Image (cartoon, rainbow, N blue to C red; front, top):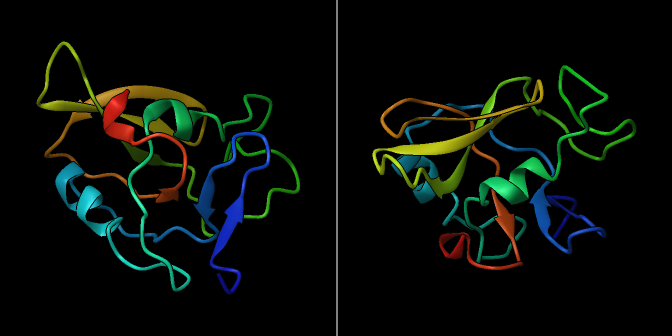
Amino acid sequence: MGNAAVRDNETGLVWEQSPATIILTWSDARFLCTRTIGGRKGWRLPSVHELASLVDPTQSNPALSPGHPFSNVQSAGYWSATTDAVDPTFAWFVNFVGDVNDFSKTGTFHVWCVRGGMNADQY
């Protein structure tokens, strides 16, 4: 994929190597992930569990493992595809200072697309 993606050998998921630094609403984030990345289709917004699997709680700014292969990761919130079961107008996000929380889908966060694994809508 021309160095546009990184395979996580622990989960088998394929992540964008360099996520976009723009912020979008939840609906726009889901749409953005339908684009072609590294010459491949099949990208999607990750589930909250998939996204949180990247967090290393011993690290901060961003909370990623030392020596990680990613660039442009912000110490900020990234949307997940997971809707809040209590309030469907909210969705879960992962903040790469280590937090996981929910927020209104009309708010804006960063986007980090993924391929493989289960469809995020199944969570």
